[in-house]
Amino acid sequence: MMTTFLLKMETLRLWSYNSTSSSGKYVYMTNITAPNNGEIFIVKATGKAEGITLPFTNIKFHVVKQNPHKLFSLQFTKNEIWHTVSASKNGVTAYKDAPTWFRVLELYSPNRPYVVFESSEKNEDGDKLYLSSDGSGDMKLKVWNKSVREPPRTTGEVDPALLFRVIAGP
Image 1: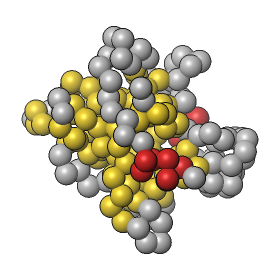
Image 2: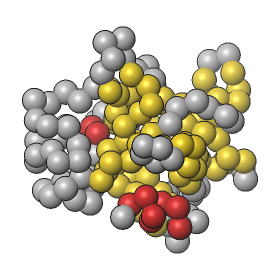
Image 3: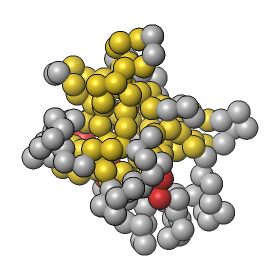
Image 4: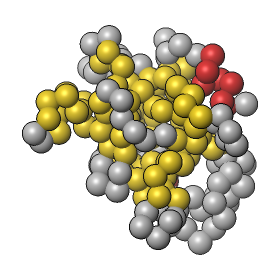
C-alpha cells in the first residue's frame, strides 16, 4: 500500500506526469522566493536532471492526521531544513510550518502507478481541490475537471495535470 511505502522510505522524489516533455518532470523547491518574503520558496515541476544539474530535493510525507484517512504534509528539504508545502489556487510554495495537508490517493488501473493529491483545502463552492502541474511546470490546486468519476476508481481520462508518482531516491 502506498501509505506504508511513504512512511518507510527515507529519501523520496516527486515526479509530475504533466509537462512539456514526454518523460515528465521532477517537482522541487526552487531558489525563487515569494515576493516580499525571502523564507517562502516557489515549488515547480520543471526538474529534469535532478542530481546532475539540480540538487536532489528530498521529500517526506509527515502524517498529520489519522482519522478517517491518513493526511500528510508534504515536506521538501533545502540546506538541511525541512519546508512544508502550502498550496492554493494561485500557486504552490514551501516554507516552515505551512498549513496544507494532502490525502494521497492511489489510482486503480489503467492509471496505476500514479497518485493524486487531494488537498485539505476546498474552493468557495466546497469542491475538493487537487495538486496539479500545468504543462510548463507551474503548480496550484484545482478542481477535478473531468466528467469521469473521482479517484481512486477513475477512468483513463484523468486530467494529466493531476497525475504524480512517488519515486524512491538513491
